[in-house]
Image 1 (tube, rainbow, N blue to C red):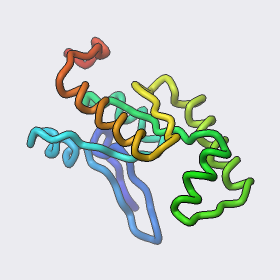
Image 2 (cartoon, helix red, strand yellow; image 1 turned 90 degrees about the horizontal axis):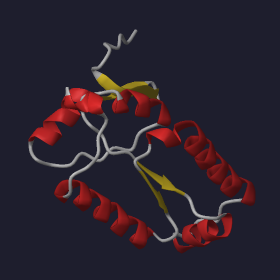
Image 3 (cartoon, rainbow, N blue to C red; image 1 turned 30 degrees about the vertical axis):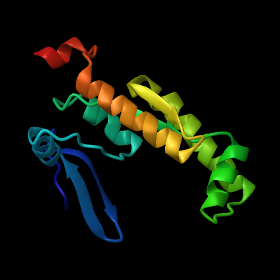
Image 4 (cartoon, rainbow, N blue to C red; image 1 turned 120 degrees about the vertical axis):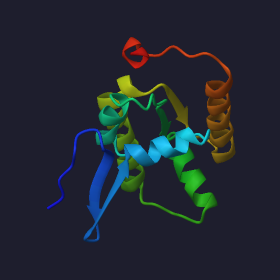
Length: 139
């Protein structure tokens, strides 16, 4: 049985009978080297991350319209069924509805290059410009 200590793991789970986790210490080690740590987390982890002392900037990458999503996937020789596309868009809408208050920015992935460049722009902005932060982070 895995015992999770509060504040030690941002996210944990099991995949194919293997336990995994993202520890706050490993993220802190990356930050302490002067690098920016980019994570792809489940929505359940966002509340843990937001309440940690890691001072995260949370960016949600949202899918485009169903037709645009179909076109993007076709470029990668993927041909999902219409119900799969609707499911992706619906799950994203649910994530925005339940966790949107935790997002600092939203990037709509209408084009992979544009979305990547917008992500880089936001990261560079964080690195070079002052930001508003919750007062609890200043303690």
